[in-house]
Image 1 (spheres, rainbow, N blue to C red):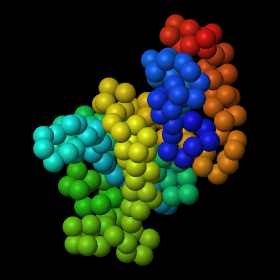
Image 2 (spheres, helix red, strand yellow):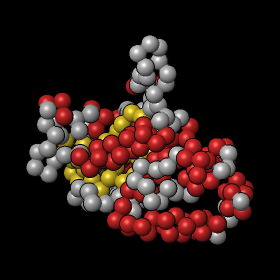
Image 3 (cartoon, rainbow, N blue to C red):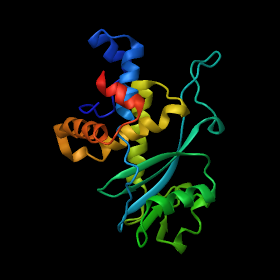
Image 4 (cartoon, one colour):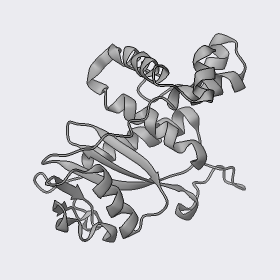
Length: 219
């Protein structure tokens, strides 16, 4: 998990170690539960915000696999500081209240925020310096106004889910977001991501872990 860009599947660990698939999946689930950064916030002159629909590819009828309709997908909101860290969370919807509450929770005041033209972002200029890019008009970069950094993270996430995991349920999606964010936020560490994961395990173990986590650490 620390040495791959897009993650590794429990099926591959099952093949390489000889444990059952259930054991491999449970190992990954417990490790991911340790990788969240709940207290993180972003700030600065270049903070990008966006939302994305994430869903598996269920078996369709004739014609192969088809993407889920947007209404059946999970909605993920994210913010990233350019050349900095990313925060991604599953949200209930893409309404103005939900997305702006998300922004106020994770973006510190006096930051400069870049978004697309989604109507839910209207009004962010009351709390931040706010610039918007008009994707619907075919404009993706205007000077330093763009959302390419957060879109790059979405691409990494979606390609990883499609290529490695194939599909992820909404119930466990946040743990996968935590895993991808953990790696992205340490992308300049090279081969030091593995020690960073061990340090996080040690940190959690010393702070009175819950029973399931404690059990996994003993195993």
